[in-house]
Length: 256
Length: 359
Image 1: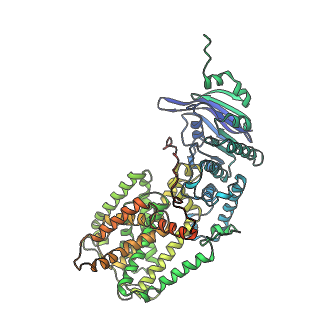
Image 2: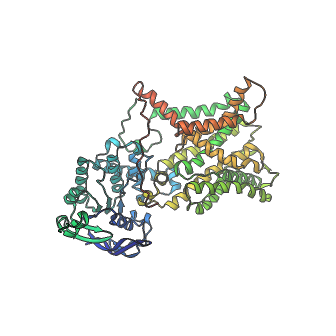
Image 3: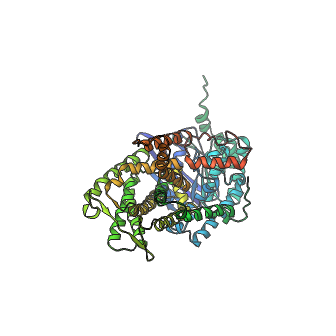
């Protein structure tokens, strides 16, 4: 059963065709990775799914429902959470507060109740706090719980961002280059977490990543893009050995 | 240095992290309640002024400090609250109702103004709100039947729970009324900050794009922020009306709006304490300057306190962008860690480049 269906999606910015006629399915419980050189349209696809961009043509269905007419702030509510390529955390808040913002779609109290802090709000806060603690436990963030984001090292911020997306309680997670700028050890941690999220939490993961060792380690299927067009799709090994992919990354061998 | 061992989630949710903190705040409130027995009438009047500025400062802090939307025209909402309070009082509405209604009126006006303002950010929002502050002066003059035009209005003593309260006849009772309002507003503000609405505001301040990705309806929460901010400022306006007794449009010149913003910058953006620190500076600085000046010369120097205020403001922006509250926190931590504090402990980390492509 496909959780996400992308059908013939195109996106142009004026005369620039960032994504041309791309179709793919992401099955429930699968780790699906999009690879490609810079400017291939990977992040554009992410922004189309999270509705920051409108599709020029085509359709995107999540769990059987068309999402191309939803607003960006409605996406988290239907079960899609994302991270950003260049960390977009709330810098002047603590790690815990960042995770709690992730619980926003689960709130049931109005702002007036919030101001009065009724017992219902307290009960809700406790539930949010517990959910955030589960994420902290899963990602080993105990040491940073009450630290301000502004003072944290880059690697930890990357993890907090994954945590914030997890706190949303999503069905599908969009990870935009989760390993960029991380050390080998940190990348390995990310690989384990992705495996755990897939196997233990039953999450579907759509990922954009350049680090091929991480891609081959965790991905079930890989889609290679170049200049907004689909080059190749299949298992990580198939895609890596596809001559078209090699050509896009390394160029053609000059035989003369 | 004290370490808190948290054993329940409530330890993170409660307003006071431990009994020690609660004790200090209770002591502060008790001292504030006893103030009329310590201060003479004149100083008590100044203390009321500080309290009213603190409420107005908290109002603006919700919007500017926590939601990241600058407003250079908040004096207009102060005016909304003040004139509405006078109008309601003259209609015979009891104070317990008229003050919240005056705030509500300012809040609704603010929420309506928020609708076009939502599309703007940064410098454009600042200019738009500045324009609003300037227009407010003319609107007050034009709405003569309600505002008394250039002549202004005056408000008589009000009754609260059967007790007649007048700023001049019973300054202590008026002070306690203001103190009560301050405590209620502060409590509500602190509640807001520890719940999902407050977190949504801060999310919008730090990264609108990511707030959206987390499911926050940015337009809706900006409107709520504008509304709450103007509500609180309107309440301050209502109290200000009673404090001034008689006033006209000149009480709400654009300078008031700017002073309000500068006040919370001096106090420390993004904290409730900042509004109080800022209000104390704005309220007591002129008296302090006069006292110091009189030891040198008896001749009044026009513009001296404004000049000194400007100097303080520039010093704070350059040396301590987190304001007086930030300095206070650093000093406290320095003493708590003594002698282990390091010089570069508070050096701000270089912030990482944010993605520009979707803005």
